[in-house]
Image 1 (cartoon, one colour):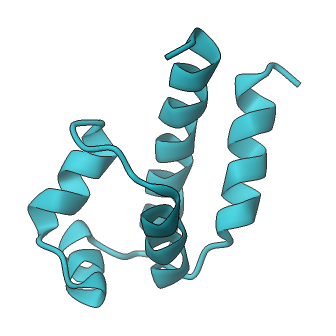
Image 2: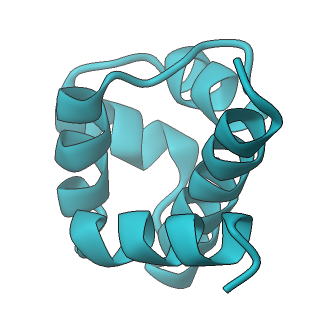
Image 3: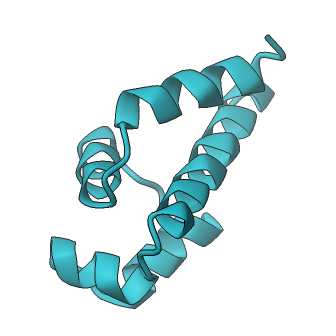
Length: 81
């Protein structure tokens, strides 16, 4: 994985966590909404478990955020734009 890829993924997850917190949704609540345990959400947020694109979209929509906006921001902020 290139340094851009690592930087992009790290920023993507940071933005996801920020959005979840801004929506006042706990890891437990999010897990319940999508049929996962809180520990799965925690592992995603700490980087122990990687998200696939479909999971990212599902989780982001579950917290009421725009997945495409988070992707755009992560890309822009990772490339230094």
